[in-house]
Length: 495
Image (tube, rainbow, N blue to C red; front, top):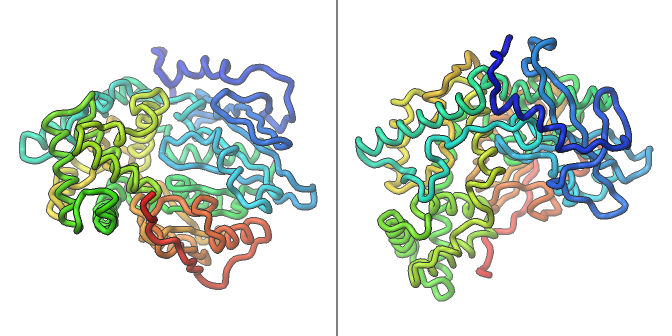
């Protein structure tokens, strides 16, 4: 493959990448991956642990290794145990597509059981197109970062046409910003090759892996391509083996179930929140808030921003109190401060995340047609007239400038047993995805946190049954004889 002489945002980032990793005396060299100091975005772990960073030069197109190349940013926190305790490397990914994994080696490792920290060098990396790995840029993304944004739930022919027009503009912006010639190569399959290049550069015979959310999809794709190089693999909060648009629609239905549970939970604490004494009354309060913001946004906060806040809150039950308080405050005073997330949606990090998210999803397989997009939205709206469609990110693939000719392969019967972990009522990655993916990974086991409603389980929910089962697998290779069901925490009390 040849790339035209005109620069693209992605390829221009190659020159800037060198400045992100200052020259330093390497802590340790392994093949072409040399470690030194880290960018400021990577936190320091508590002493005596240390984190070190480097960059790995890889082909843009794995089928043309002598063609253009990009750099992948890698971080490492060495195992804290003795040499006899060491089990190799544990590559980690926080999800997305679009999540930065460079700091994740530090932040996730801090939550891992001590036995896992003693056993593994924890390896983080920014997937291609993300963070410090030649980040992708889609510019305005069809108005996605406008504040207030357009209502994300189209109602009626005019709104549906406007919705598709915005998706087409997003696809055009990504083609112009990242470069049409680059779009096919910011895919999960190419990232999987980068993962194996990291393994080889570190001199390890196998890759053990912990992937959360989209990270589970990455892990399943690695198992498909390199089954004999899989060490111990944990796939947490599993994305199912579906086309991305189909997954997004499944998620939107799960969000409706989670929101209904939230309404019931809020009504049970009517004296605390004042939003209604039954689920229907709370729903009316919720709709009144959204309709008010649609009619008159407050300081750039309208229906799109409202839905993003709801989407974020529904994914973790510890955020439900804040959502209910934010609704009450807005309805009583018009103040939206309690509904705003902690970081700006249009920050550079968020812009890169949203760009990489669409680019990867649209590179991973054939997208839907515009007619299928509208038909799916209408079906969800028949289930509930006011759904949360924030996660319908692959709709822009209906207008993408590159049309992949195959889906990303997932799983392999040649891979060793994998541990899948799921929350029974996770609305972001519904548990049916774990059950479907397990069919592609024979011999694997599913660890379910029952009576739980949150996204992200292992070393996240503080559940001893889950954490103990996964630690035993990672450290000692103990594969449960059957699926494991762990007692969950239930719904939280008001805080």
